[in-house]
Length: 138
Image 1 (cartoon, rainbow, N blue to C red):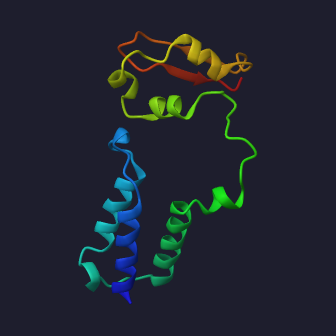
Image 2: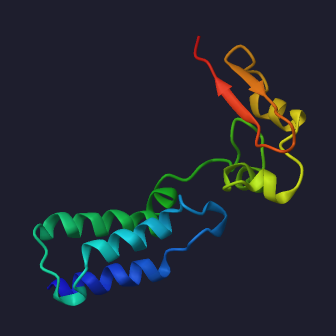
């Protein structure tokens, strides 16, 4: 039975993408690392809690298949900031602003916080570093 669990996790790891722009904090890479640790002996690994293992697999499989995205569709593919998907990817990438050219400009930061100036202060640093958005709930 452990062999089939191991094979299912391996298949999930093969299908799960690795985002190279998020080195050191990518979920796909972390998943591969954890599976390697949990199944050190491969198919011969003895699983102490098979129910918990199956539950973990099912949860990860639902995430990978976009189960919740399909079950609860969004009426629009927008966010409060109005930023595009590419702008979010740039902001969330590891060192992306430094690697891809100019930093997030004040205009982009203003769009991000439009109408929320009472809650947030934007600190836009020099283009040599990534800008920070600091939110203060007071």
